[in-house]
Length: 401
Image 1 (cartoon, helix red, strand yellow):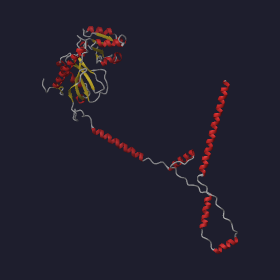
Image 2: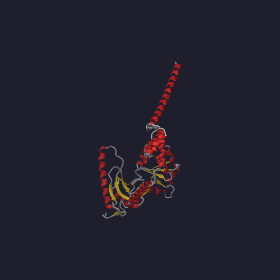
Image 3: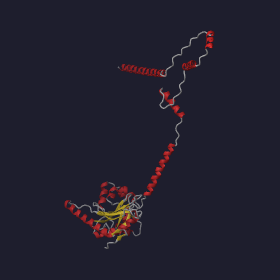
Image 4: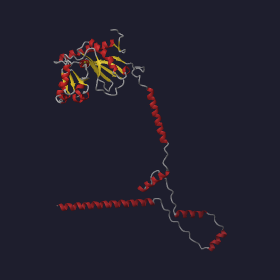
């Protein structure tokens, strides 16, 4: 094998050979150690091709993609093959006999799945007895509910085939001699490419034929593939190919643009600034509304509200008279001759005394005294209700006794 040989112009064939040899040697040593402590042999392990993509697939498909391989994984001479068909079951058994198909060991109809194989133990025995399941493509959507999750966990979900083709034998042979790519909604998928009972050269041939077909069924092709690994059911994965971690074409970060993120951030900051300017343009509440609120609060509590505009105090009569008296006192004195004549003609009149000015605390005291009287009335009414209730309860007790 040449060192520069590539599989599908990307993967090194020499790297694949080294990985397959190392993986099978490690798996054989693990099986030998396990056989020393276990009496019965365990289930045969498979070799898996692990595909990692850059972007997820948008939807999950029930129908798997057929991947051709050089050496089949299931041998009908050593393992049983089961075919699930529509009703009636006898019609399809006769169809297989007419085409001379003898590698199908069992035929099961939908009514049998709903009846005989409805219990969990019966379905488990069906799973254990057969190595491969084929199903008519017209009944594939019904099978997940009828078979249960154990078939999918064991990677033995039925493979769809077309039973209405003229070359029915060739259709079934191609289905048995292929492996399948089950597309999920994540970024990691595994494809069975060999078994531990096969030789390293056979596993390598399967890997060479399966890898290009797997890439064709991935959305985006090689541009969406991040890496390829191989592993067994319980071993670590060995890398055979990985994309570059740069920003050029075909690299890991080729489809990610940082400029778009910066543009979106700048747009978001501009929107925030516009919102702040809109909030600043909102006019302040008018003074009239503040006066109304202050008046409502004073009417409810009897106390002036905070930050309320102070009303101008009304002037009392005594204050007005006092101001007049002060103006008279500060007026210029008349001449002595005119004063003497005025005193002789008019009798002396005594000046009236001004009443004391009303203090600002008196209306507040009156309001407090009125509030105390209301509280006393409420307390008295509650006490009267309690005494009336106790009297009624006492009468009821006396009547009962």
